[in-house]
Length: 151
Image (cartoon, rainbow, N blue to C red):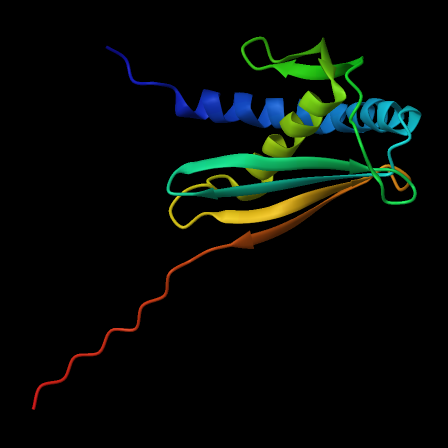
């Protein structure tokens, strides 16, 4: 039995990351266009994780006056990366599903393991007008101060 080739695997992961970075501007444009057509100004995605489990808690969209609106169910075409083939492919999804996919992807890229141990929480803000995505991230931790005395 041969041992896995970790160097080749790491090289493939690096190539996949580069492809994902390459398709990000196109995917953001497709998403923001769909949200703009639906009259959406902002989408806020709240997440929370701890104890080796994490999830999206809510996704809320608002219009220009701050009223909550539904995220459109219409299909959008985005680009994705086929890890095994290390190629870019097209996929059809909904704006809501893609927002969730992007949130998990960005968490993996910036804070892999965000759901482990004491975990983390925060929110993404998708600003349609600015065509920007901002992550506010708070990590939990436990601190202990040990003292021992012998008299």
